[in-house]
Amino acid sequence: MAVIAFTFASMILVVVGDEDSAGVGKRAHWNISIVFEDDPELRDAMMEAQATLGAFIERLPEHRATGAGTSIKFPLTENDVTEHVWMSDVDFDGEHFTGYLASEPLRLTSWSFGDRVTTPVGQVLDWAVVDDTTLYGGFSVYVFNTRASAQDLMAQDAHRGFSLPDRPTVWD
Image 1: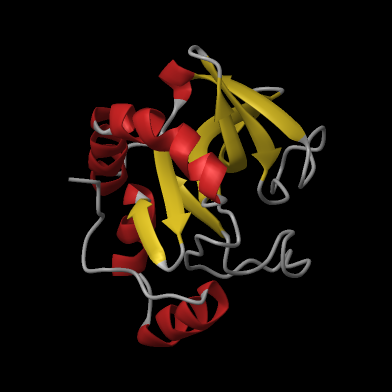
Image 2: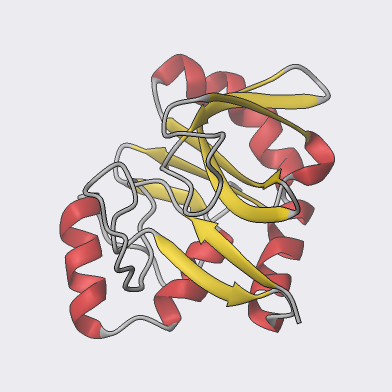
């Protein structure tokens, strides 16, 4: 059974402890989670994200113009080790997303927080937009929130500056 490390952008915080904590914006305790590859809830979240990716792509130019935070999650691999990471400040050329690595990878040494990264559209595992205080997408974030303690959720909400709705939101 494969294990995958998920790394999350500081604007989309999730739960778990990590003894490698290096501080906000890097390998902080709240933004790394180790999960099993066959997790059915995460698989469902990824399928929902992929099914609604067209809405994200359609609105991406508008969100970039208004300064909304745009992110996608994708697999980043080095020497047969894969982490699912968030890319921020996303741009799309019709085939590939390009942006900046939104946190420090846990086990990938060739990549660092802020590095420019690119991934094909077919590799997107999740997407998120933070427009003012509203989160759109972020399907995997909700999965991790259901697994979080009340204390962790309060800490995340305080750091994020907004609370998550009860379930992921996609535009009308």
